[in-house]
Length: 444
Image (tube, rainbow, N blue to C red):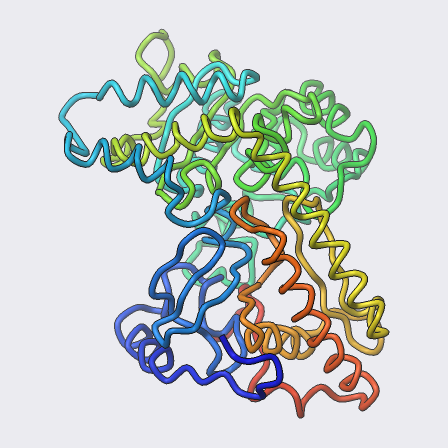
């Protein structure tokens, strides 16, 4: 990593690798959130390997990593229990012409962990699971429209959602018109929306919680509104699953959705997602009913044995080792340290930590208290130079107290520079190049 007083972090091999990535892969990454436009100019490390809470780039620099794998690696990289479970399956074959016994074991473990669901079907990514939930809701209700929570950033790569974003190129207007939006926490507005589109909305889909806790009674109220209007209630638990409680947000808040989707932490970086829910709905995608068949989820690689073995190991580890509680404890220690560091440098109103302790994010605000990509660039740059790779402050259970302490020290140094930029009224001299960019934007 760069030394604490260093003004430069040189990444020549990463720069060359990024050029190769852009030449061969649209966007230079397989997920837009991993793009080098999300990092300060010439400071987008290309990763060589990781272990625990640390990663190394191809230039040999080591970083403490947060938000690992876009929140998916919650146990830390190469977790021994997960690696052992995966390795055990690799020599036994990964995919067969009929279901493997691993599928039964993974489903049993999942439903024991999330007892609010009665059936589960596995896939490889979150978008497949959320789109399957939407299709199932439309089939069950006979209605065309989907109501998505307007305050949540992402649900799927598929047309029904991407058509609502600034990156809607290639999506027919007729498809876009079938998706409507409701605000989080506002039952009256949701009621009004469902009344306006009476008997047209198949489902309400939302993250049950994000950077703020749900208002008291909100989720239970939404459950009642959905029932009264005949809508399917879908909880997108890609992030909240395991991080809020072992059984997700539905387990923590005690409100049972009709369908829910899981991913991210479920495989600790291995490709596995899940659609779960009430038997009455889920069975419409099965063979034991008399109605029209729903093409629910049918994926060649959805039941890949080593990914399901990883999921089983993850769920077992969470249950037996109290991982969710550890994530909260680590996050609380980190949040307190960052807030103290920001306050000590006089930027507590500008570097703001938000969210549940197990899922922390940070906001970078300008002189007027407005979100600023320029100040985010300044902040990220200083973190990277201190050996902290942190597009968010989402913790993994592999972090230890020394990692947190070092992170807080680096944050304090970053906040000192932040204060200088605020006093100057212009962060430009500390950016080192173009500012980072939002993921969702119309033009490249």
